[in-house]
Length: 322
Figure 1 (cartoon, helix red, strand yellow):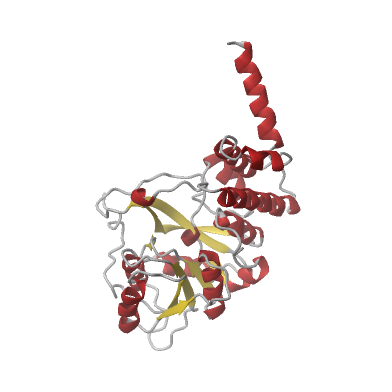
Figure 2 (cartoon, rainbow, N blue to C red):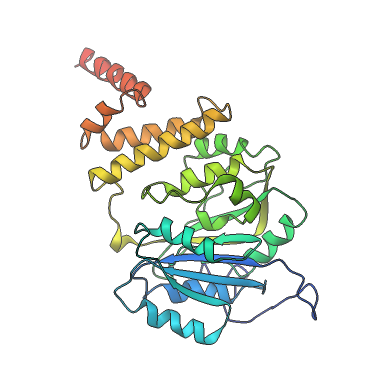
């Protein structure tokens, strides 16, 4: 199965629709794309933007200091369609995708925000279907299904039906399903209003690991409900040749711990205690860090208290039967 066969033609300009053919009454949607050295991939991403059946969008690309041909590739899209914008992260901002996202938001004018990474894709009906839902549900967010795919477009997408592929009248219930599924929603599966963003705050530009988990925890907690749109799908690229451990240095490991501490703090403030979402996050972190960065475990032993206790009990049981 080709990932581009599910109702997504990906040809530019197909099925353009307007609510009113004379006056465009559709709310503006800002698509914000941070990028860094993605000359070989960003064209596919921008093609998926061009193919949207929803036409009232602006696409704000923010470059984090690319040294490859990203600027030249983006220029072909600027020449093709005035809805594209190209900006560079200001020198006084921290380097990283989060700072680029925040700067892009500052440049944006849309009533709704679509986050999109420069190597991922969205189906052609994504913005149309989700905007249609949110127009009738104030203070809510929209989500859709997602699939992983490999760099090679001929590879099959990796499919799975997650528990959280549904709507939620109580948005915080989704954390239970995140925990039970041991998975998440990538940032481009959401469509969020500017009003909710103003309540939630923007991306933490100091985090480099699990920043989307921390950010969307705040988004969900500030939403009235979550609406699942059945038809659209987003695609999350797996780049095997560039696969590097998330914790390949101590700073990244420290930021991962910090992100989960913040998530726990957000949930605790909303009286969500002992969530499987948090417990699984801690368990995963502990398993990854306990040998390589045992010093960080010791410094954060209060945070990993349950994992340390369970580990000690397991070790005692193993020794008993040796």
